[in-house]
Amino acid sequence: MPEPVSGQPTVSFSPAPVSLSTRASVRSPSPAASPTDRPRKPSGGTTTRPRPPTTPPGQPRSDELPPLPPSRESSLRSTGGGAETFVDFVNRRDSEVVVHWLDYDGQRRRYAVLEPGRSYRQQTYLGHPWVVTDAGGRGLVCFLPAPDVSRAVIR
Image 1 (cartoon, rainbow, N blue to C red):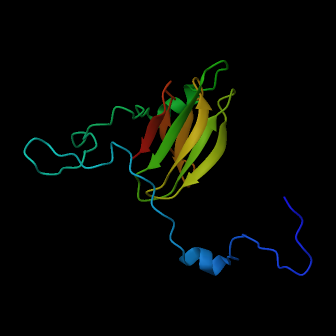
Image 2: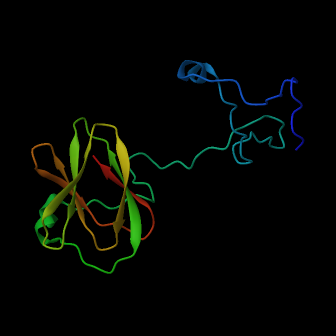
């Protein structure tokens, strides 16, 4: 790159300064829709959107873990050597719940407090049981993780 000649201004191409207030007001472009998000035109000519699979009312989704009664807690404890997996805990109750991992001695290890309507993803292992309690510590339900990412719905 040639050296600037003395007395001549140098040209700079830096972006304009941005403050937090201007950043908040600038809208970022929306990401391009994936092919599955785009409307489809069936042979009849009307536009429809793809619909998510529906589950009949009262039936658990195929990715839901079967709930175990809280009375099973005393017989559950973690075992080693299981593959890594994930559980999405979903609180469908009208009150907060507490999620506990049951350790190798069957003792509760508190992991999360979920407000009503909230959920979170927990990394875990096959062979690691979980118990969900109310705020007072009364067992509500137990879950055993599955090989695939699954949902633990607390009702």
